[in-house]
Length: 290
Image 1 (cartoon, rainbow, N blue to C red):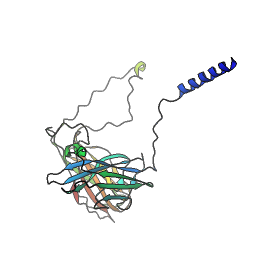
Image 2: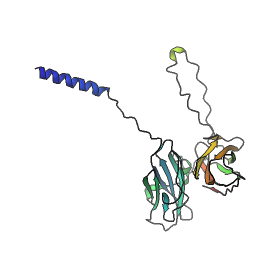
Image 3: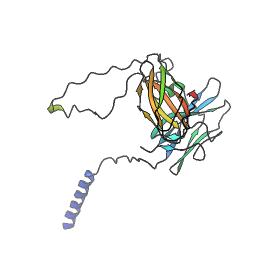
Image 4: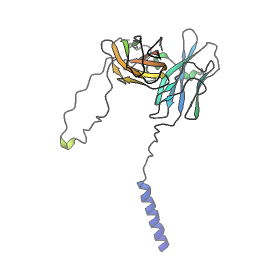
């Protein structure tokens, strides 16, 4: 009898402890030390019959930025190792980053992008599978809900003024000029809610730590290539005023850098890349539209 009572008490205690366990295990976030996973986003059919293989990547680190030059640790096949892929990897997911053009008769061949980071190698495979076909508009919408080719909204056009000089530590002005059709119309700023009384403050709380995204036409800069980190001032999405958006870039080391300006109207985005050679105050920047 005593044994039954003891067993019952033990089961009751175990059940109580089980109910106290968390219902979900928090996701582990790594600041550094993780790998980079290349992604195949899909392929685009070009008017001349060729195809563009579109790739992105996922840097598993939340903070660590990695410089991996084209070569044994970062190569594309066939035709590599350097096919214009990123050599500087920002944290987390970066989609629709670069393309590899293949000929009309590419057939069942495969484009492979291999990246080795923090001792681990990952690969992405690009094939001309029908289910992987995408369009330019899908890329411009970053995979978001696309109203179709009949949508009256046209993507913005962005150009970047030439950079005449770049010196280590100095602020290099980057001036982007944007032309757009004014669509879609920017959302109106909602009126502020009336101040809550002390009795209702808990229900009326809002997250005041997040800076709201600018509405309307914006330009954002990111680094694609380079031996060291580039800082932008200001960073993030910069509102376009009177057709221009200006930011400053600072370089920590000499070398060849590729920076990308992305102009967005809130629905569609286009990009242009600028190459800057930082070498004792000299700069060259041939520009290509992506």
